[in-house]
Each structure stands twice: as C-alpha cells, then as structure tokens.
Picture 1 (cartoon, one colour):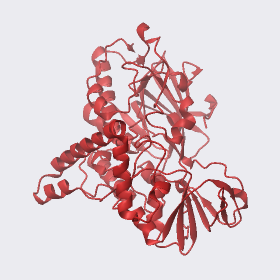
Picture 2 (picture 1 turned 90 degrees about the horizontal axis):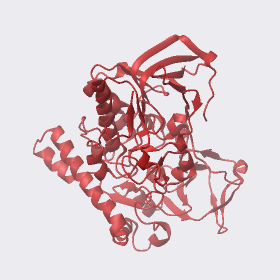
Picture 3 (picture 1 turned 180 degrees about the vertical axis):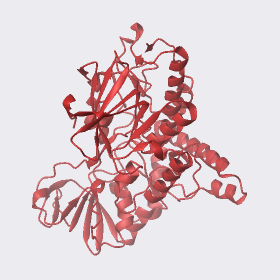
Length: 500
C-alpha cells in the first residue's frame, strides 16, 4: 500500500508549516491535540485526517449495533467525563468526541480529507516534509513540521481482511465485510451467515437477529466472551448522591482498572479458574442443554486474545431465543446457495458477512524517507513503544490490546509533550533514539509477544513491525499497570536519546 511520490507532484505553492503535525483525528489524534494545547501552549499544530469527519473507527464503521468493546470510563478521556452507560454505541461515542473537540476549540486544527502519501525527513533542515492529497487530488500539497505525531490507528480503514474463500465467486447472494457496510442493505426476512467470532460478530448477531429469518455465527474456533450487565452499580450510587461527573469518572476509571488488573493476573496465574467463570456466565444465559464446550470453549488460555464483551448477555439471549445459532466448523467451499462445511453440512444464506478482521496499517501505509533512504520500519527498535531507533522527531501511538486503547494514548500524549518541552529547555530541535553500546547485544523480540497476545491481524504482519529488546527503554510490555509508572518517570537523559 506504500505509494511512491514523485517530488514533481508536490504543490509547493500550498506549503504550510507547523511545529507538530498529527496524523489522524480519531481517539488518539484528538487526545494528542488536547495535550498539546494544554501542555505546549506556544506550539502550532494541525491534525491531518483522511476521512471527511472526525472519529476514526467510529466514523468508518456503519454496521448494525456498532458499539465499544471497552468501557467508556477507560476508553473515554481522563479530561472529559463520560456520563452514559459503560458500553456505548457509535453515535454516542461520536457525540462525546464532538463535545471534546468543541469544548476545547480543537475543530479549527483539523484538516479533513487530507491523506498523507509520503513523509520525508531532512537532518540538514531538521524538518519533515509531507506530501498530502487533499480531497482525493493527484496533485499533492506540501506540509512541513518539526515533529510528526502518528495517531492514525493500526488498521486500514479503506478495506477489511477477508480470506480467500474457495468458491466465493459462485455465491449468488451478497458478501459483505462489516468495514464497508452498504447503507441500503436490506436483511429483513433473509438468511444470514456471519463468518467470525470476535467482537464484531458478537455485535451483529443480537442487532440483526430479530429482523432476519435466521442468523448464524460460523466460527472456525471459539472465542472467550465476557457477559456482564451494561451498568456500573457504583456509578449509579454516586450519581444518586449527586457526586460531580469529574469525580465519578475518575472513581469509575480506577475501579474498572483495578478489576481489569485482577482479570489479567488471573489469566496468567489462574487461567483455569478464570476460564470456569467465563464459561459459567455463558451457561447461565444459554442453559444447560447448550453445548458450551463445543461452541464457546477456546483452545487458548483467557486473554491471549481480546475478551469480547457481551453487554447484558445479548448475543447469548439471541441464540437461546432460536433467532440465532452458532456453528463451529471449517469452510469447504462457498456454493450458489451458501456455504458447504468440512463436516458435510450446508448453511443456506442470502447474505454472508465476513467478520474476519482487518488489515494492519503500519504508520498509515505512508512511504517514509529518512535522509533520502527508504525506511524499513521492521528493522527499527521500539523505544517504549513510542519512538523508534533511527527515526528523528516522530512518535506513534500504539495502544493497549487488553486495557482500553485510550489509557496508553494518555500516557503517550503526556510523554511526547514532556519530551517536546525538554527539547525546548535544552535549546535543541531534533531527537533520535539509538542503541547504547550495552544495548547492541539484546535479543530481537517481536513488537507484541505472541505468547502474550496472538491475534491474527498482528501475526500476519509482525515482520513489518518494530522489534523490542529485553531491557528498558526498549521494552513494550503491553502492561498498563507497569507503564503507568514507567512512562511518566522515564529518564529523557539516559543516553538512548540523541539531541541536536
């Protein structure tokens, strides 16, 4: 997906310069902008957003019932109280993000329909030059900045991941990926098969079940689901006591994080006990006659992949009602009328939905050039998973895969602002991570340890991701409870950051 850009394509007349350019106006980009305005008041900045509105994920996805799979007390910002239910729909989240922008006068900093095609760093000029397509134009405008902050997320918004299913060309119905959901899709009275068993499938099944003739979740292997009420009793009590929204938000955040910490530790220390609890919740909704062992008992330990939250057990209720069902099998081939399985069973379908995941978008699929040499991102070392060896003046927000993404976005935002202020205090305008002599013998470890988290989208592209080592600051632990202390206290003069 990298796009080579000829310098003659750049429209030099349209050059615009900022101290910091933020790529993306979703959860992370808005968070970065808020922190810059709050902590680096003299810096100029702009957000370049490829879509025609803010919101990232929540603007991209239009499928029925789309909702968060993280609670909004941690997925929401620490600086903007959330006052709705723990799990929220996309329209509620977009409203919250819009308020976050308006209340802090951040809309003026966004440039919509701006797609960054190339990013070139010049050490001589200590500056990034970006080639940007505006409104889909082939003629690229030029933006320059001293510091580049990548907040574009980690998956490709333009297309989802769909395996090459044999015989798919023979199917007479519609094949749809949730990421490109047709606005005019009519599924009332239709037979629908959803391929996949993650959070998207868990959202689609209960949202569509009442309107379809029947909807089936077809999975190759089961996923762990966490079924809980979509409410927080502590929050409800505090609201009755008329505690301020700011206090409620912070208390709820701490409560949720404490509970998540217990679950994470149990996944390593007592995986069988945690597994028993998760399956027990499923059995409570599905009943004793349902084969939970076959359909909802994964082969991996809990939390090795993300737990899909099922608010109020809605997916399980849809299955128990008979409007939905789950089939655990592998696909032999698509047919004209549906899907033939390896077991010989055939699933009839009018619509097949491939809820099969997404494609990684590493650094926004932008072609990066560092002093006239093309960047091989997979050869760089991750400096706390924020900066990267050999790449000057650039940060990338890559959040947590268990704890809410925003929790790391907060830590990264504070770190980047502290680094920018530190550079000003030193009177320098360039910083580049590099390995100290004692670091050069470190083992090359994957950016995310597959023994810790083995989601398919990561494993497919792990060779393109940076590497990490076995000592700080070259460790990306994916552990909020360690990083919430380590990152704020990180030594900016430990010899791994070269300033000029």
